[in-house]
Length: 253
Image (cartoon, rainbow, N blue to C red; front, side, top):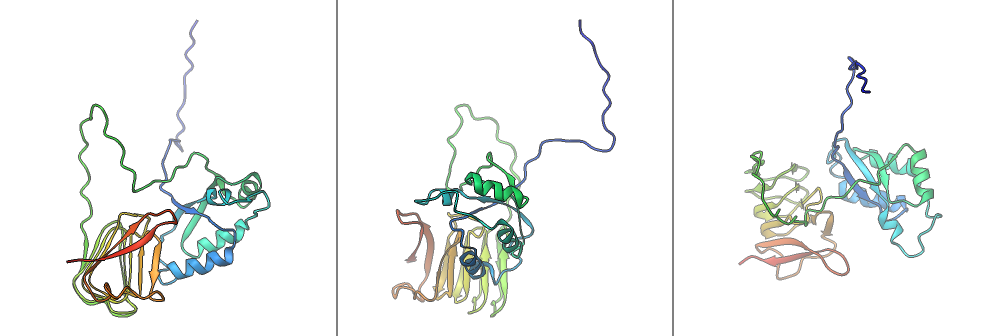
């Protein structure tokens, strides 16, 4: 016997599945003072780099350290406050030990065991029977700047490449989620792959930068540029290695 029961749809709300883009913070140390110093060094001059971006805290690097145990405590309230200073909104956490996950839950973070990090280096294999390709959305063109950038000025190409046709003076900053091309002397700070694109590169007609960064790996003027590179047309790229990623500079001929 089959019985059909009439249903009434709610008038005031509807519930559906949704996907939320997240920024992920891979926490490698519980020393929040050290974290604060490094965040200030990386984002102190760009307080609006993030725009209330939702954040997932991934504790996997802490578990990989020798001797990691339940005593590896984290002050999540202080961590949330610190990240909020940079317009980040922590909402979830994953890969912590039981004590860390309990502390995170008490601080208002949600467990997200099924969240996955994206990797710009990963290229999925083609399907055996390719389906008709959907019409792609037109990509953003490069942001082009044709005037010199003075000390204190900052340009950020969100979601695209940046092309600068004039000098980037000391104290100026050029930032892009993609590549950075400077067809003039680069004397300020250049940060490519700002949101984690490890394939991004920096190109300069004359490299004299105060700071170079690709996907968060940076080099400051405290380490002088190699003599064969300084002042020459140069590309900077990120190369993985057994001791971690490093910036490699090569002269363009």
